[in-house]
Image (cartoon, rainbow, N blue to C red; front, side):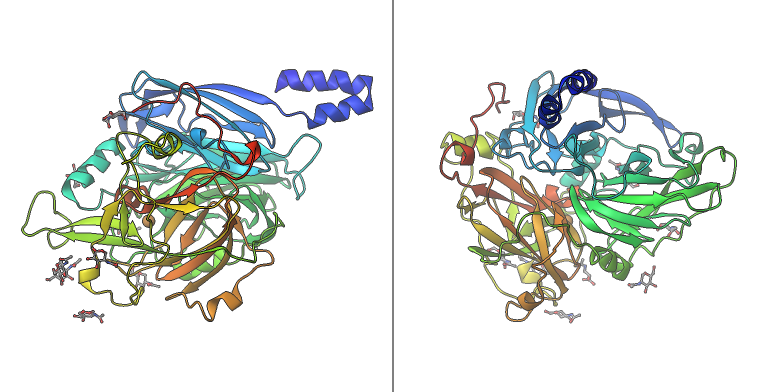
Length: 563
Ligand SMILES: *[C@@H]1O[C@H](CO)[C@@H](O)[C@H](O)[C@H]1NC(C)=O
Ligand SMILES: *[C@@H]1O[C@H](CO)[C@@H](O)[C@H](O)[C@H]1NC(C)=O
Ligand SMILES: *[C@@H]1O[C@H](CO)[C@@H](O)[C@H](O)[C@H]1NC(C)=O
Ligand SMILES: *[C@@H]1O[C@H](CO)[C@@H](O)[C@H](O)[C@H]1NC(C)=O
Ligand SMILES: *[C@@H]1O[C@H](CO)[C@@H](O)[C@H](O)[C@H]1NC(C)=O
Ligand SMILES: *[C@@H]1O[C@H](CO)[C@@H](O)[C@H](O)[C@H]1NC(C)=O
Ligand SMILES: *[C@@H]1O[C@H](CO)[C@@H](O)[C@H](O)[C@H]1NC(C)=O
Ligand SMILES: *[C@@H]1O[C@H](CO)[C@@H](O)[C@H](O)[C@H]1NC(C)=O
Ligand SMILES: [Cu+2]
């Protein structure tokens, strides 16, 4: 970055024309990410967690739209791991996308893999995280994409900017928490804390000294780049006495709107402007659970950080008012305010009309067993269109596709539910058990796709934050109950729908998304609550090549890990 700036300065001195060429030039950023066990102290105890380069949260990547990123990942830990660049489109480079056994085999302990990709027409806040079992509980960081040199934000430049990463903390190794739930068939233990930039904050034991603070000067406007990196929980977020102006989400600018409360699901990002217009002092920034599933256990604690006006180090902070954990109305009315600033055209003609149910599920055991400790001798599971997704083990799906290796996946993922039923009504127990498979859905290059994601009342309704890799999509509609293909499309927003890479399915409702399949490769779509992806709440799109090099998947890198 620095070298580049100096070169620019020199060139600007010589000639305006050359300066323009300099401004337009993109850079390549090289980083080494060493995944390593790292000692930290949290909630009164010493722990060893996986981090990148010993940092928790991990390093912030700062790039510009158009730049190339080259990250050599070295696995110095004891677990297989992969890294995912959440929300990056990865045009023609799915090899760098990261989900384990989908686009690559894991990097084994002692191994390395270099992720290479170019940022194409994206600006704003994204993030990176491990995409292997539950390692992303501690292996994550911010990925900030600034506008190209010479262009600017569509809002006044803030005086300061901070990534603000919400996380979820267990006093146990999260890999053990996952393993225990996989063995017992029951829900995993809930977390012990939420965190802001790695710190739980004042309301937890032994945490006050390290509470994260965000400094401001009275009168200035700052930008918070909020990222929800929590493993399993949507969160409500607020700042005492300060309104927030939302300006961007999932690396897409929004029409600005003000709010006292943000609801953010795992995988999502939301940029807010805050003006320090209150009496100088200290104000709590706080986040707590939004839990949409009745009767499902969750961590009901509250994490805090502090917005600190200059030289107000000792004043006592005020807490903001947060909604009740089950306040779905507040969550939905916040989400309903998003409108995009134009970002390409919304597809109006649809070639692929898909309808996917998004379900939890339950497997009966004939008798009580150690492996069936979910209620009434069952095991929890989850599915889309009644298929519980199974990751292959012998190869990655992408490599198998590229090399035409048979037996790794099938392409018969159902475009509509195999059985129609009253999705959000009282679903008969006989329908609760899905089939299992590694099923993909094939899309022709360039096809215009609509997906209705229909939440169901199998086991319980719940807001599932659904994330699509390799794309962002327009959220054209949402509603309660079962989607009605006769009446609901008339209410779609085809003018300025929000653009996202992760969208919540209203609990007991549906959401409609659209995108153009312009990125060939193999792309995972899944619930970003890791508890649900481990139960199979996922599917994969296979987007075929188009015509010519620019519509064709690149060749795999030489160092691609093998299974
Ligand atoms: C989960 O919680 C139970 C009950 O508190 C505890 O006995 C068990 O050790 C926990 N397991 C893990 C992996 O944290
Ligand atoms: C959180 O849950 C625990 C256990 O169910 C309960 O005792 C406690 O009152 C709850 N706390 C809050 C703030 O709701
Ligand atoms: C939320 O839960 C509380 C109990 O904690 C209950 O009294 C209230 O009715 C619930 N509200 C909604 C909207 O379900
Ligand atoms: C378990 O069984 C009891 C009694 O048979 C029933 O009331 C309850 O709803 C069942 N729970 C679930 C989750 O199916
Ligand atoms: C749901 O259906 C079952 C039988 O299919 C019935 O026993 C139960 O009472 C129904 N529950 C509700 C809330 O309608
Ligand atoms: C599982 O058991 C319940 C009763 O506990 C029954 O209603 C349901 O049909 C069973 N499901 C399957 C798939 O056998
Ligand atoms: C899912 O498939 C299983 C096995 O074919 C079947 O028993 C169950 O009823 C199906 N459920 C739904 C919701 O389609
Ligand atoms: C790690 O990955 C390799 C290659 O896919 C696999 O053979 C091995 O079983 C994995 N180890 C674990 C613990 O999953
Ligand atoms: Cu989910």
